[in-house]
Length: 361
Image 1: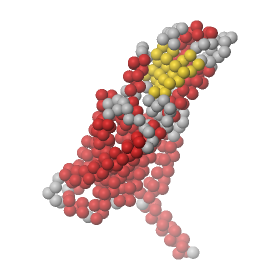
Image 2: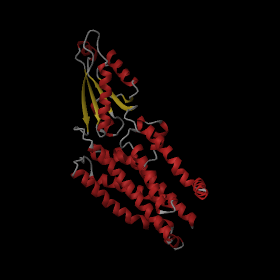
Image 3: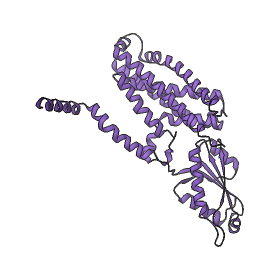
Image 4: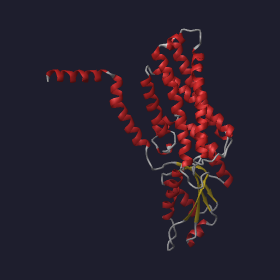
């Protein structure tokens, strides 16, 4: 028993001396519970909306103030026409628009008031939730002595059938592209380091940038084949619409794949073994991508620190692009900001990778 007790104490000391083991043992669960606790929520807050008030009377203004005071909505645009609403939807500035008809106060007095609710149904769950919020608020409105409530006329833009597949397929495409591209690249380069081949390359006449490109280009071509397959399956098998240009989508996918590959190279410069590279690729990419990319959970409902962190997630910008092209039919004239962010991230990751390789020289 004394030998057994000494052996257990030795194992405890070994674990406590290993900082990486302690980080996985204690740091990861704490980070996960905090991230999941704050990020996973079915409640939506501060959703950007537009209001087209064609009545401009006391009751319409009161209804608008009540809706905005609920905490679920934030007024992004006070529009004057349906064309302005459509433009705001296409640019992704709003998730919902309210259209209040003329003579709203008189119709409300007669119990005949109606309210048109237009939603961006590229995220059908959010669209349905926002409509339910408006329904609950409108049910409390009414004139004294008249039946309470306002008739809601919902209209789902870009996804009339509220098919959840139109939300999940673009998100799954994004996650698959990011994980496969970054993971394969990081593991491949780390394997060369483990086998000692990278040291030979680093002392060769080849420049670090040439080494990086030589490692990345084969995976770039293979990843684009993978992307084409996944998008084709989503379009043909699940019926996800393609309203925009295939060329724009191809260019956007190429940009995102290059960004993912360059991120994989950065991971490979940090990791010393293939196991570490695999763990970093899964834990540092999968969980933040699912939670903080607007794929499933709305970022606007998360605490401000998580909203800031979401800005460094490449998938957040690509999901906007792929949904904009496939579901809304827009091009780079609308999506140029997201494309510019991805291009900037790609250059940053490549610069970090080249710098780390030069340090090793």
